[in-house]
Amino acid sequence: MNSHPDGRQGTERLLQLGNLPRGARVLDMGAGAGDSFFVMEELGLVPYGIDLVPRGERVEKGNFLHCPYPDGSFDGVLSQCAFFVSGNVEKAFTEAGRLLKKGGRLMLSDVCFEPWEGYIKNGGLRLLYSQDLTSLWQEYYIEKIWRGEEVPIIKGKKCRYLAIICEKE
Image 1: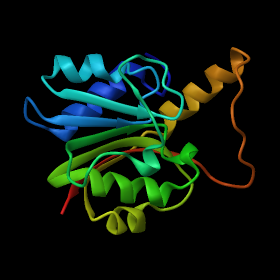
Image 2 (image 1 turned 180 degrees about the vertical axis):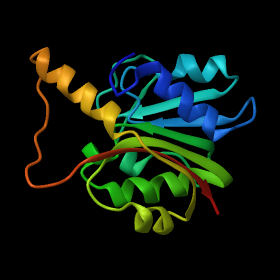
Image 3 (image 1 turned 90 degrees about the vertical axis):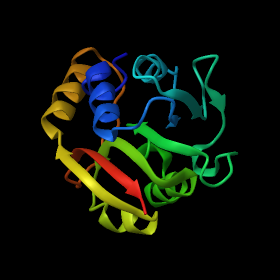
Image 4 (image 1 turned 60 degrees about the vertical axis):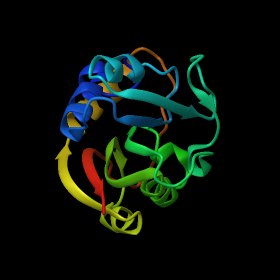
């Protein structure tokens, strides 16, 4: 489980900061293989996942920018390293806000090239917590380059890696 900076520990940290009650329904937007499901289940959460290219049998195939779930379906939304690569960060926030119940939590870690405050507000969310984890991203990125893996290069933009917790208003 190392498909994002800080691997399993990062997932655990986000879910713990989200402070959801046992039995809460949580959607992983950009779930990949569904590795986060194990952590969610250990915390007593009920996992769901969606990805364009699911790599796990429990992950639903679909575009998380247009989820097939009704408004207010989830107590929590988790996303790690997926909002930026979706190509529409603003829509990702809006969709997360739509899917959350009132008081539900968005638990997100991702690269950030511009301020997210407007996206948070437009998604009907309120920021509860933010932490700059750029140093973790830099280590992760350098390690991928060292191993010869393909990594995206964005020229001319300063990149930060943030962990945020938001609440649906």
